[in-house]
Amino acid sequence: MKKSLALLFVPLLLACEIPGGSSSSTSQQSTGSGNDWVGKEWTASSVFDYLSFGAFSEFRFFHEKGKAEDGLYEEISDSFAHMSHYMETDLRWGDMQGKTTALLLSEEEGTFPLDGFFQGLLEFAEEAKDFTEGAIDILSGGLANLWKDLWVNNEGEDARLPTKEEISAEVDRIHGSSLALSVGEGAAYVTKAGDALLDFGAMGKGYALARVRERLLEEGNRYFLLNAGGSSLSFGTNPLAEDGTFLIGLADVEGYGFRVRDRSVGTSATTLQHKVDETTGTLYSHVVDPMDGSAVPALTTAVVIGDDAGWCDVLSTYLLMRGEEAKIAEIEGMGYEMFLYDERREDPFVYQSEGFPLEEVK
Image 1 (cartoon, rainbow, N blue to C red):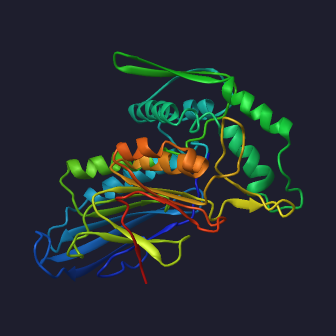
Image 2 (image 1 turned 120 degrees about the vertical axis):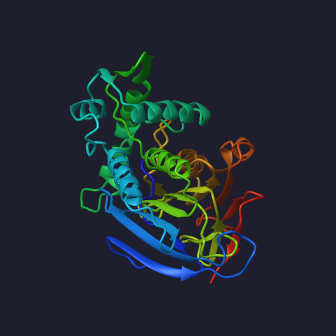
């Protein structure tokens, strides 16, 4: 269940734009008054890492000139690069568990040991499945591959829609498989039954990003921008803006954006991974519904703002899939704000939470 992997958001510093490269830095003095970062000279450093699917992640750190903590940024960046690769399309990038990881992602059944990170991820995946009533299910990898390989990402002459029989077979694989966690003293294991393939596309980057954010805040770092492939982002305070916010442009909603500070953002959209059936006009996407096998999204863009990047990741995918039928009131009750958009409708602005800070931008 992969999300759109394009850079859906364009992070715009209100005072300057950091140039690209393997690493870069610039100095800027913030202006205005009223906040403790104002009036100081700041240096911004960026570390970039390309993910396996061609998108990139960026760590952008701000520190007062002359007070950089050498080594900290590289250490955190290395940690996130490892997590991001570990969470990619089939997780075979990771070297945390080597052969065990590859086996768990295959059709093999068995019991496999877990490290702390993967244990937490699987526990989170179970919470996400429960909340979405099965709409977000990491056992849906085979279904996602079916739609992407045959139709959504297939540009060849052999591109075709999956048959009802093929879809039904993949749905049966999902519902006929299971994962069971067992945690003992100093050890954790997962038992996989059935031949379903795993896919962490609806939560992997967000979950990893949340762990990195925790590390930053524990180290006392307030000023940062974390971008995992454009669909999962986490922000501290922008010291180059008097109000501390970052301005985020919505690539799919021309002329609109929003400002965010000390929050995380998740987005799911049909921007790049979609295909329209010219015969029927139906738009199919990379987001698949494990309940019935459908790849027709209810929306074309869903944006979620909240404290936890993992939940922002999950909820944006869930909302793209289910639209107004999703648990909107419950999501808002959890403290998350949302913006829902569907370019196929006469009025594409489907829903906006009362607290979602949408604004017109130039």
